[in-house]
Image (tube, rainbow, N blue to C red; front, side):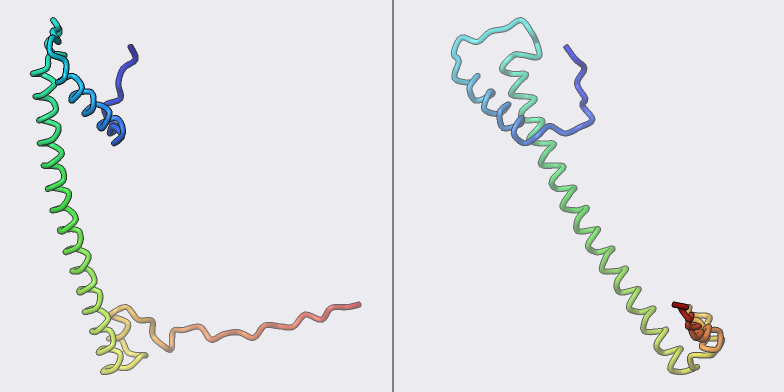
Length: 124
């Protein structure tokens, strides 16, 4: 029997098939086995554990999504506040000031003037 890769999740279809098998087993009146992991009680316990842990996962996933949304909104609030101070600094001190450079702008006098492209004469 090949080793199982338990690092990947089972597909939804396999879980549904397994649940159907559990419900089918419950219809068998005289099912008995000597394997401890194949008893009806062990199967029912594993099923309940799976449902409980799926519920815990969903709750934590919901909390994670809420925290992600809150962090994203906080990032945007911070970004908009920085944009506002940049506008104020540029308006108050000008585009060519050291203060504008301090908040991340490039000084207007440091910008490279566009150079004219030299036309190349094509001999024909």
